[in-house]
Amino acid sequence: MERRRIVIIGSGPAGYCCAIYAARANLKPLLFEGFYSGPAGGQLMTTTEVENYPGFPNGITGPELVDACRKQAARFGTDLLTEDVVSVDLSRRPFIVRGGQTSVEADSLVIATGALAKRLDVPGARDGEFWQKGVTACAVCDGAAPIFRNRPLYVFGGGDTAVEEATFLTKFGSRVYLVHRRKELRASKIMANRVMNDPKIEIIWNHELERVEGDKVVHAVALRDIDTGQITKHEAAGVFFAIGHEPNTAFLQGQLELDEHRYIKVKPGTSYTSKEGVFAAGDVQDHIYRQAVTAAGSGCMAALDAERWLSAQGVR
Ligand SMILES: Cc1cc2nc3c(=O)[nH]c(=O)nc-3n(C[C@H](O)[C@H](O)[C@H](O)COP(=O)(O)OP(=O)(O)OC[C@H]3O[C@@H](n4cnc5c(N)ncnc54)[C@H](O)[C@@H]3O)c2cc1C
Image 1 (spheres, protein in one colour):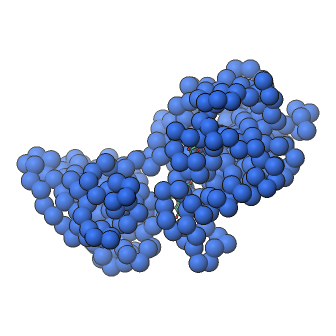
Image 2: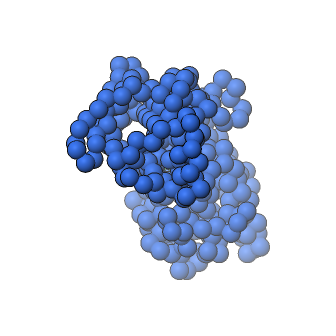
């Protein structure tokens, strides 16, 4: 079996940025980009304009940004495999990384498998419909887009993230509606009070999204009353899902410490995980910031941490 000094799993900004640094440190990284686990290139492949990544004053599309990162990683000698990692064995060193077709030994391992933003699967909200034409899953990323300015915006969810997103969107929308399936928010009391006292936010209790309507972009949402089943239509320019993320950690099969939401636990301020020689970067270990630039930054940290750790082990 081939042995590598560093293997990186995941092809978002965290994985590619880690690869750029590791390749430039002469570690000849191997990067598993994924295949069935999600689009190679990660969450940015599902978005159109990225306007908050530094270096692009006029914005850049998500796929273009990812493609540039990928080329930069390849240019310095990263080997890229468009395969999922199916399992890892962290009980021995070198570690074993088993892909769909390729298995390798790894002296060090960086996990950058990201997280999936959950979406409501209703008519109008799907790919090829109004997804990214008014329907999104990231208020911080997309809220400032002109189509949302001074228009009614709908946030779906009831936890802290939904409350944060609704509050953030009051900067842009004419009014923000927080739609929740229950009669009580799951958010912490302090957050719930904040949103209930915000004059720009109205909570619509006990309703769920039935469908999204529009022409080129979103114009309306149809909501269903959970108790009566009655459907009402409301003018809307934006639909923001804030119903949680699913970190891609199942393939680890309990070999690393995770938090209660299945994100990888890292030593604060570093990329060190609970297992020596295994590092984590990007959204798979971050449920707070979840941005391309923070993911890329933590990818850089993981490469530097891994490189120093390998040196200390006498692996160069
Ligand atoms: C709709 C939307 C719009 C967004 N817009 C912006 C924006 O404008 N600006 C911004 O800064 N951020 C934006 N974000 C957030 C940003 O996309 C993420 O923070 C960032 O992509 C996280 O990068 P990552 O490298 O940690 O993981 P990801 O981008 O999630 O990439 C992880 C990769 O790992 C792969 N993978 C998973 N499991 C395996 C496995 N077992 N084997 C191999 N590969 C695997 C996945 O297929 C995926 O390609 C947006 C997110 C969404 C959902």
